[in-house]
Image (cartoon, rainbow, N blue to C red):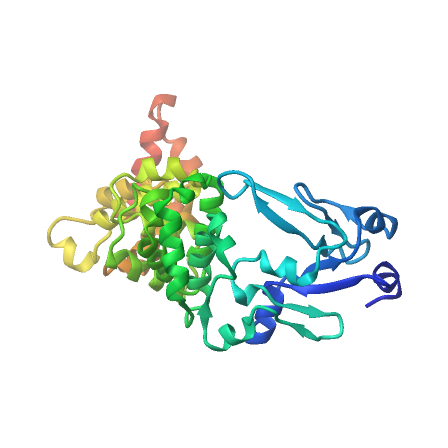
Length: 371
């Protein structure tokens, strides 16, 4: 810590909290650190040069490191949904009171600047037992916590959910608390879970608690989908979020409605729409040539449908994704795309006798390359 940083923090009661403490105890790589300040006021933080960034409650950026420092707070339910809270951040709020408002015991530990662990809710014991357990009854006041629990299940693959926590989540669904979740937050947690080590565990929690039916009723769960998204996570070729979302939707008919509900990014919508078309068209060329498939016209038609000439990288992702579902000769298809991309479109266009024939001339040149 630099001298300037020491000056900003000197005399403050500051603690590292949450995920940074948990991951350090698990021996996982350290991510961003969250800090809690006990016994201070917003005015004191400003006088030390901290930069205010908080909305609903006081959060400040350190003047040098730019790490976030939040004043210790308590919260009280004042409305429906994850925004229905009133916060209190007085200087009399203790560290233990702040930790008690958190979701899971493994996220409710703190550490002093000198490395001393503060664990009033037995988070270490649950960490050693590989157990997700809610801190207290206030868990059910925030429906986002079901999403976070599901995402943690996808990330910490050897952890299980405590029976009482699972029962609490089911009650939150039954009482309609989960209905207050907004699409942006659902997608934020869902997308992070899809990019985790074992996404099927996230889906299992959402299905088991009944939350999936409420937050994305159009989606259809299947064992095949669960297996495929885990295969995507474990694939040698790293598949992006758009590919994993396409697999998530593979057995869902109402893809457009699901994407609209969750406000899914365009690239995810496109891959979810194109993957079923690719699966129908992309087969092993040796077996299908005899049946008249995978001719130049057949190949060209698929490349055009997927806009592969303008977006060859995306077509490559589609091929690798399709390969997880069925037997696909990715190399064969990449060679055909390379042949088409190698065609000099400008030279082909100049062979046209009139402007209206340019598109046809370019396509003919590309078909010739395929033949």
